[in-house]
Length: 89
Image (cartoon, rainbow, N blue to C red; front, side, top):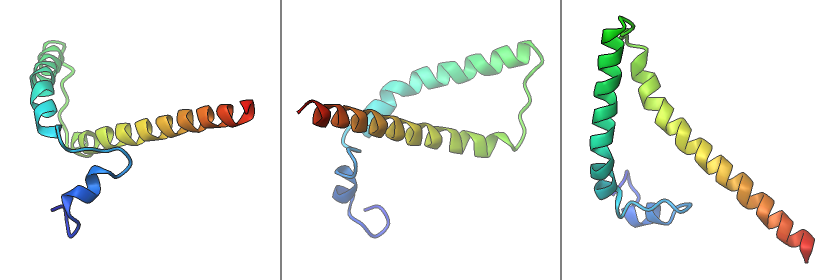
């Protein structure tokens, strides 16, 4: 359960399914670790590595904002396609 609502209520919420979340996360995890290590190595090599507390909220909010942008873009494209269909008929 998530909060006080059962998990199955979130599985059909706007097309978000949590069925394969763990397996997909495990597939993507090595690429994420390799990228993070590469970023740290390059930043350390170039003396531009600046780790401050400001990175914590950015690292939390950035993926969330990316998901919101994807939903907005998909809604905009779907709305435009729907309007094109109704204009043709």
